[in-house]
Image (cartoon, rainbow, N blue to C red; front, side, top):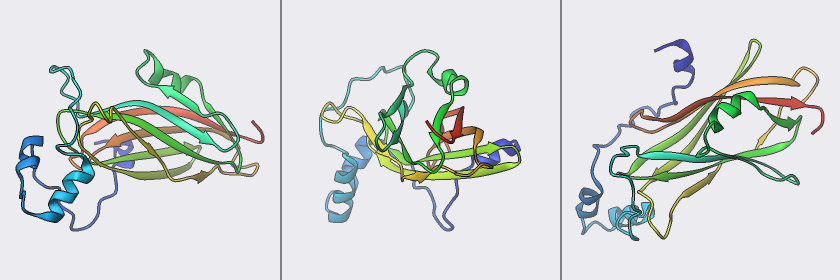
Length: 197
């Protein structure tokens, strides 16, 4: 593992152990008389709704469909990752964020084949020798259904850096990873902090 990969490694909670992987059917049968477990399964959507039709050859668990940037008073910027070349464009065409502006990211994704446990977003942004790491817990999800064909998660609001020294181009690497340390998407992108839009 390179130093770059170490930076994108999600933080762990001491003493937390990932549970044994189970199929959807095993979760449905698990301790049917346990009220708290039943509520947990319902909160994930296990056993509710008609399963979405998926490609049996597509073994992915999590498919990140789009990324978005919300800034109050401005139209959302949405990058549809289903489009060819979308990930490459993130590196070639930087987002612009006004210094000091409040913004938040959002992600739209699908889950298929099995329960997705502990999805996290990890980002490392660099400008010169400065580096900042962000980690956002997105949660655990059951496979999508016809009634709920996708999930959307909004991140916590953030404030863009401000001041003359903070302005400039930042290079970021982002990773969506789960509790089993499976990387569902990793990409590089660029954003600029400017005095104005």
